[in-house]
Image 1: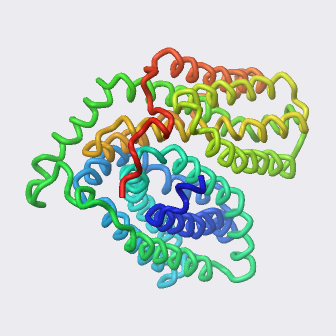
Image 2 (image 1 turned 135 degrees about the horizontal axis):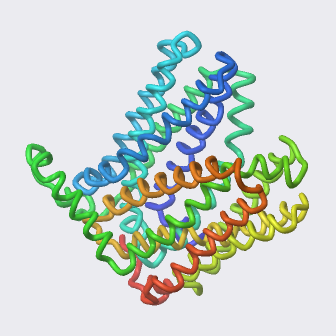
Length: 414
């Protein structure tokens, strides 16, 4: 991974995103605590999560069309500046007295972040070139796991010692830093022109045509459609497990909040180690194999956890499965980026994001509906079986001609 990190463009691209994600992660981990402290309402607290999730579910595929039409680097810079300004609204009207403002800001930032995230994924192959794409995705997964592990503790500490205003300033400043870093990224001229676009007045006329063209591509492509199906099956299992983890800890492991925190931390540490491992083995393991191994391993861990409900065994399993899980996500992102033509990449990423949230929500609803009927052990086994099924779909349906090892691809662009 050091080979890709020493590239000037990617170093700027990655470091800016790392800082902004840390700032936003600290704030949005702390906000639910802030809401509950001032309201004492679980309904109000849950509203924060809804404000962040619903835009991805409703607008993901639509924003991808616009990302394909606009200059992606410029889109990311504008999104960073918009988010930096938007979050400062929390200083103008203290949310303790204007709780509605929290939901407005959370929803607005989620919408803007959709544009940023899809532009980020769509432009990455141009930043690093195909030969370093797997390593770049592995490094992004590594930094994301570091943030998920560190942000909750840092956000809670800042909130407790300095209050919400300090977190708001930190988050806003992190977006400005990201925008400045992106401003110094140099891309080939072709990546800075509008893709499938034209004058702004033509945008509305061709919008739905472009949106439908993206869906047709997903439906007809022999690589993208099986990826969507395999990933969707696994995300149903993931949604179920998200609901089942707390009752599993209580009923099967006979633990409480402390043990729950250990399991979450084990997942985070496993993800960090996994990012390092995948970055090193990606040169010899095809992306298709990373996906299959990741999904089957994740399912196997859940099946083993259901059958062996011993805390320290489960902690070890969650830590060990970190590498295959990171491999799953790295392989998925790499195949999507490599397979999809640049002109369609935003739409494909957007559609995947929408389907991701829809399948995740489906899993949550299934677990909620069956939770009172089926034993928790059987439910965890069902979630594990869905992961394995997703891996088998990827094994059988994904063509073998995926992205090759870096040595077989063309040199880095730029």
